[in-house]
Length: 247
Ligand SMILES: [Zn+2]
Image (cartoon, rainbow, N blue to C red; front, side, top):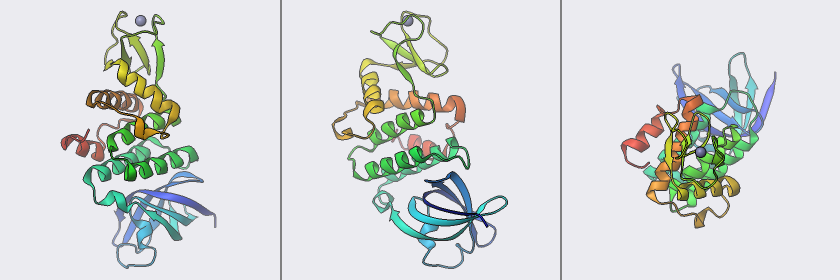
């Protein structure tokens, strides 16, 4: 029987039948996979923690016809620092939900695996969870091949701005050119932060200061790009963040 041994993070869990759980895992070796954890809702075992969301572990899975089966594993980390802070927990769930929505099943994506772990570590430590989220969104877009082009107006080549962002084309259009439908406001400060977050990722994130306006603009740009392809607007965690004015 084909085996998969891999470090993996539990993105989500769903009840399955009377006693089982269906785990969605982001594995380092094989990308997103689904695995049945038999009996995991009935009996507590030493593997129980490995069937909970936001758990990082070393997993042994057996390949089946439709899903993998969870055989055993070793707990590497529970992101407990996130469990007791509503805002951080909501962002962590948002990161996992976006990965679940945007990654194809069974396609290795080791860079996204590492990006997600880095984002969760940063979320535990950073006093400003929202900037961690913006950094994650932008860098995930790059990994998904949707990196926004932020150098110049797509139509006339103007590099000075002011600009708006066109999520359909993934690029800037200056305000002197015809305004594309659905284009979004993006001021010079927001653009500077976006360029920085794309160039440096999570390095020196602590010195990156975002105004509430830039937070909002950058999030809308990322959401516009993701929505264009993946329809992420209805993600539960996103609705929760918006309903509680955390975004
Ligand atoms: Zn222009």
